[in-house]
Length: 177
Image (cartoon, rainbow, N blue to C red; front, side, top):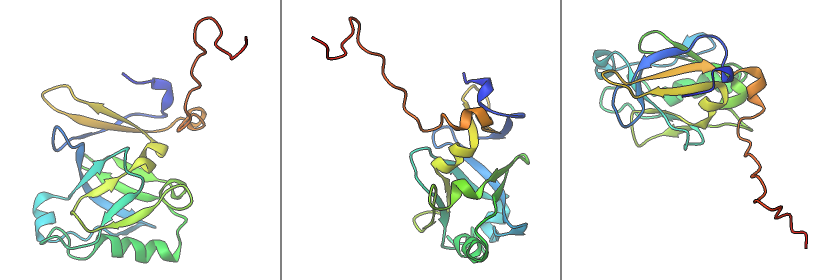
């Protein structure tokens, strides 16, 4: 379960592409209203590219290579060309099924976030920055695994990343003799 007061609006759902990697289909990535996801023949045939949600990754890792036809042009280069001229806008990512995630600049860029070229794979890796903007829910019930996204509720934002203070042990334990 999850705290329904932790998010605002409706949960936006998208099907997971696999059962173990938290992957989802990404059909569009826009910056300042311009499409930066330029799919090659393989990407077009598949209807998009794989996006992976990973809370253990610090940055948004953006594919740099063409990866044997997944991309017609480098996704990272396209994004960097737009973002370097004006890095104050959200990144808009459209998922399979039509849900649109608008990731605010305050969580994808310095000093609290980062974007890196990802040369190891054709996957767009959405790191912990996504969790600063969205409540992310994994529905692992069969027959259809899916992920849900909803904007973090304003009162909840201040609690993100804070560790709770452990309760003192029974009997005080405050170091008093």
